[in-house]
Every structure is written in C-alpha cells, then in structure tokens.
Amino acid sequence: MTATPSMFVATVAAGLPTWEFALSPILAIAVPLIGAFLIAAAGRWPNLREGVTLVTAAALLWVVANLNNFLEATPSEAEALVEVIPGMPLAFHLEPLGMIYAMIASSLWILNSIYSIGYMRGNKEKHQTRFYVCFALSIASVMGIAFSANMFTLFVFYEALSLATFPLVTHKGTPEAIKSGRTYLGILMGTSVCLMLPAMIATYVYTGTLDFTQGGVFAQPLADGVLTPALFGLIFAMYIYGVGKAALMPAHRWLPAAMVAPTPVSALLHAVAVVKAGVFSVCKISVYIIGVDQLRLYDQGGWLLYAAGLSIVIASFIALFQDNLKRRLAYSTISQLSYITLGAALLWPISVRAAAIHIAAHAFGKITLFFAAGSIYTAAHKTKVSELDGIGRKMPWTMGAFAVGTLSMIGLPPTGGFISKWYLMQGAWTAESGFTIAVLCTSTLLNAAYFLPIVYRAFFRKPPEPDLEHGHDDHHDHGEAPWPIVLALTCTAAATVALFFYPDLFVGYASMLAEAMPQ
Image (cartoon, rainbow, N blue to C red; front, side):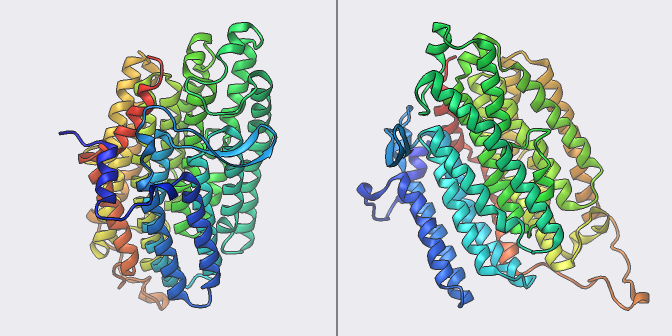
C-alpha cells in the first residue's frame, strides 16, 4: 500500500495527545517566537539556552505534524490574525506547498540546532545567545511565509526573514562580514521593495485582491480586456525578480557574499529558510497569483524558462573554478534553485510537482554538504578544496555524508535528488522542451565535474605530510569534529537516502498541488 501524507501525520502523532482546537498555523508561528524570548532569557546559562532551543524546535515539529487540514485538495479557509489596513489582513491557511516548506524547516531546525551546539562551542564563537535568538526568529518568519493566505502576509514575513537573518550573516562582526551583510540586505530588500511591492499594488488595482486563489487572480481582468497581456507579463516579471531570495541571475550576488557567516548560518540560508523562501514564493506566486493557465494562454512565461536554464548552466560553470569549498557550494545552490524555477516555468502540473519535490530533495542534500564543510573547518581548519587530499581517511563519517550529498546534487540514486530530477525530466518531456532536456543533461555533467573531484581527493589521494619545518603540523593529527556535528550531518545524509526509498510524504503534497492545476 502506498504511503500518504495523512499516514505520515498519523504516525508522527500516534500515541501523543492532540488538542485540535488549539492547533493552527498561527501556533506554528508563535512557538518559535516564544522560544526566541525564552532563549534570550536563558542566555546566561549555555546548557539551558541550548536545551530551550532543542525543546522549541521539537515543539514546532510536533505542531506542524499535527496540522493535517492541508490534506484536502483545496486550501483551507484563511484564518485572519489582524487586519493591518482595510482589506489587507495578516491571514494564514494550510495548503500542500506550504506544508512541504513547513515540514522541511521544522524538521531541519532540530538537526541544525544540534549541529550549531557542536559548531559554536567547537569554534568558540562569540554572541551565541544572539545567534540562537535570531535563528528562532528566522524560523518564525519561515512559518509565516509557509502558511500565508495572501500576498500581503507573505511579503511581511518575507521582509521579516531578511531582517532576522542579517545579524546572522554579519555574526563575526569583521569588516568583510559587515560589507557582505550590506550586500545581502541591500539586494534582498531592494528587489522586494522596488519590484515585488509594485507588482502587488498592480495586482490589487487590477483584481481587487491579493488572496492566494486556485488558478490565479488575473483570469477575469485579462478576459475583460482591462489588463493587456503585455502588462500582465510585466507584472509576472516584476514578481519573479522581486523574489531576490530565489537567486535567479543576475539577482544572485547576495548568496556568495553571505558565505562569510558561520556554517550553521550558511546551512540556514541554503537549506532551511532563505533560499527556500525564494523558490517557494516563486512557485506560490506562479500557481496562486499569476496562474499557470494564464501564462500558457497569453504566452507570457516563456522567458523564465531560458532565464532559469542559463542560471543553472552559468552558475555550474562558475562553481567549477571555486577553490573555496563554501563558495563552490554557494554557486551550486544558485544552480540547484533554478531547477525549481525551471520546473515552475515549464507550466505543466508534472513539472510543478517536480519543483515542489526538489525543494525537499535539495534541502536535505545541501544541508548535508554545508554541515560537512563546517565539520572540516572545525576539525581541520581547512576551507579550500585543494587542501582536502586524504581527509576522508581521518574524517570518514563527514566525507561519507558529503559523498551522499554529492550524489543527491548530481541526481543519482539512491538519493532524493534522483526523484526530483526524474520528475523534472518527465515534465520537460511532457512539455516537449528540448532546451530543458539539454540544460538538465549539461548541468548533471557539470555537477559531477565540480563535486566528484572533492570526493576523489578525500578518499583516494594521499594526505599531505606534516609541515614540521615551519613549526606546526597543519592540524595533521585531527579526527572527526565534535559529536553533535557528526550526529547532525549523519542524520541529514540518512534522510537524503531515505527520501529516495520513502518519497511518498513530499510526493503526496506535490501531487495535491499539481492535481488542482489545469491540465
């Protein structure tokens, strides 16, 4: 019997008390907000502070797992929190795409918190209380984005996420970190305020609503001739490039710049929160605001296919020449994110399904790679690919997990990346898009070209001799990183493999999303 999302929720909740009247999307936002306050209060006691972080993360996962109203094929009724201005409430609801995002963020927050304990202590990082508080505020913003019932709510929490992650990017406080933080915040808020916000205003003017609606909100204005197809296409383009967190070239510079942050922050940016907020918003806007049927009918979305395809290939080529490991992973993220945008741009239900599944597959695979990079830095103080000769012999768990993440990014079994690429290739075949097929084949080869040499170096090259001539051994005698780091990266690697064998949870969500779309 095939597993379903409802079976997963039932399994998670089995044996636990449920108070259905108290469970709502608003509670999912409130839990990390309350956690942030408690973490700040416990800041003087590190063990208590980190215990509160883990308990809060576990509580959030429990809440999200019990929010099972999303099993209906159509979005649930919106739940308004407050009406900020007339006709513009902060409102929340449950729908399949939002549940994918919320499940990823809530489950990975626990593992990222375990990892952070080992990393922050192992590297004697300063301002650890601020770090955990901002992390909790970021997750609260993610929950607001995931469960938003209208574009206004999504915009508010999208901006809140940018502000909450800014102190994390600039955590080290160095001139380089401050400069990179300004680039990060400038691009993300500049694109959203200058492009997304005007697109929202135009949407409200022409349609009278910003509610996420099945099939989009532009059908009537276009049919009545109130809105021209060219202007409709312009609004769509403003939305897409207004979502700077999707890192579609050329609005991508913020992402490599943010690599100055500690590795748990990089993992947050690339797997749990920020970039997923970007591609989630692209999918949500395409399906529930613009409407893929309108894009097909009026032929206004074709350019996005080529923009995403070029971003995939160009970012992959740049990654080939990056010796800094985190920068190589950053450009890989730019490329992998555009797979999701590419799936949405194909405008077919199966391709949108592929985009939704790749959100999950990329999250588990990429967080594993960043966890491994941080483990290498903590144990061996190495940051460059050229320094990794033989390191797999001293850090087999770390580099074994890295190898699993590598297979997922390439799209090979037995990893979750194979599932999403399989659906994406099916979508390209259904759409008869030779360009997309060529991009997928080319990028797969490029992914192998910049990832497999790292694995080869780690396991098949001889380690360098100790540099005793200069009075040090270049950390030659290191072993694995502290156990919380190794535990976390082992779990995410295992989840990446598990997603290949048990993909039904996320495939189920994605299928619900696709089934509600026009065929």
